Picture (cartoon, one colour):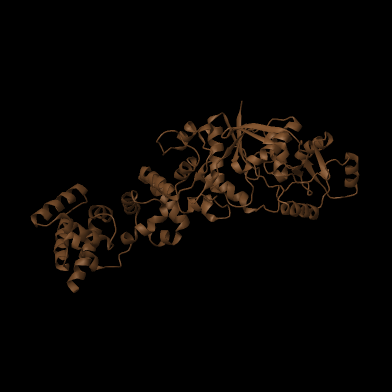
Amino acid sequence: MIIKTRLAPSPTWFVHIGSLRLALYDYLFAKKNNWIYALRVEDTDQTRSVEWTYENMVKVFEEVGIIPNEWPSPYKDLGNWPYIQSERLPLYRPFIDKMIEEGNAYYCFCTSERLTELRAEQESLKLPTKYDWLCRDLPLEDAKKRIEDWEKYVVRLKVPKWEKISFNDLVRWRVEFSSSEVDDQVLLKSDWFPTYHWAVVIDDYLMKVTHAFRWVEWLSSMPKQILVAKFLKIELPEYAHLPLIVDINRKKLSKRSWDVAVEEYLKKWYLKEALLNFILFLGWNPKTTEEIFSLEEMVERFDIKDVHKSDAVFDIEKLNWMNGQYIIKTPIDELFAKLEKYLSTYEVDFYNNVFIKHNDEYNKRILTELKTRMKKFDEYIELTTFIYNDSKINTSLLLNEKMWITTLELAKTTLIIALDIINSQEEYNAENIKNMFIEKIKEAGLKNWQVLWPVRVALSWELFSPWAFELIGILWPEKSSERIQKIIDEIEKI
């Protein structure tokens, strides 16, 4: 059996974090099981379709590496097989005609005005808002005559009045409904476009989809789709209704907020590997303490049965931590290439006016020291201000009572010791410099911090920065000597 999953988004906005989770689960499940993973665009609601969404989908899925092996033909050379619903309209009509002829669907001629009034009346009486079956028992010949007279119509599903409807969900196990609670759903709209509940059944059948993952919000639509499949004598895929993703206040993530757009997380530059790893855990648990997985490990370990029923909390601090772990683990050359791509794409001014004016070796030394501090790449500029900027000097930062540095004269004395050590080095050797500092500080009868604090301030001109030896490792002796001399000169002017 060939396993086939599908992602079926509507082209109504950017790719949502939730859509990425669906895509990842589809990909992992299919990849593990003799796979086909398809992308089908569900655009039957033409009033909500946004043209640029198609291009955005392609861009995002290619960027994160969750690439379907079947998707819309405008973007992949897949022949004439349409993967966009609006291009599939002729495929739906034979199935709707069959259901009408067999009495499982019917033409409805009720106007939108009448339906609005009906709904208002039901709401005022605190009744469920459902269609009142006015057209349900119209003779078929009479209905066809009205259609010949160009009367507008829709086609509705004829839901059995008293019937138990059940299915086995891969996440929620056995789920049961009563048909008395199910409305006579519109299947074909007056513009001849199918509704979701109709098209999804036909599409999954024709495309031979075996497994469908979607939001738990769609669970209530299952009885309509089960009935359609039953009337047409076709099989539905196995369904898994996944938990919602909520914020830390337990509110559903809004699709209309840029805070949930995948491309925004790529721009802030979360590594795609970290983003996928984080998304994996939104509702899934491997039943171990492990949290960091490569994509290959995700494929091996993923099991849809390990998905939770409860809502998944999107914790940005957890994402930041996980991204930081990936930054630490990424080899420096690979990480540097990613940083260059980020800066040249999203921080063009900084990249052109600052970054590329220094050689790769210097920039890599900076990145090597900062990779344990950065949670994501958009912190790089802020963290390196003191490294790239030689223009400011603030001698007051040298004074620190906790470090027993109470006068600028004492600070100057300790800086001269540091300057002599650095100037004595013919080439940079971290271990030699560290040992010489320890030896000279001891000879001068000082405490380590009485020397290392002023050196740290002199090299960074910041209150918070990497420690002295790390800064020397970034700036190297020549630049370190230059900065220390500048602040000594400034003290002598006071």
